[in-house]
Amino acid sequence: MRQPSEGHTLVIPKRHIRNLYELDDDTAGHLMRTVVRVSRAVRDAFACEGMSHWISTDPAGGQEVHHLHIHIMPRRPGDGLLRKYSTPPATPPQDDRERQAVAIRAAIIDLQ
Image (cartoon, rainbow, N blue to C red; front, side, top):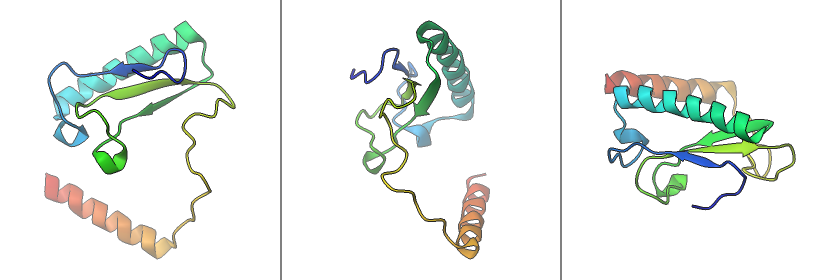
């Protein structure tokens, strides 16, 4: 495992789950409780000043290993890791954001 910062840890479900989309609600709850517990331990063990967590899903999302896992990355100011954006993104017009919200809400209803 590459380790860009001391204490970088992965939380990995024992049962094979390909990616976030295949995660059931019970396992999701257990997984998040584990991420919180491990994150606190990493914070205390390595005295980091912040933390990043991430899941990559599908190739376009940067997923390299096709088994769900969550990265816990200790952070320090100026560490140069995981920049949010190469340039600040534009804020879409309110109408566009509202259209996107409607589409997401409709998709959530369809999933129920």
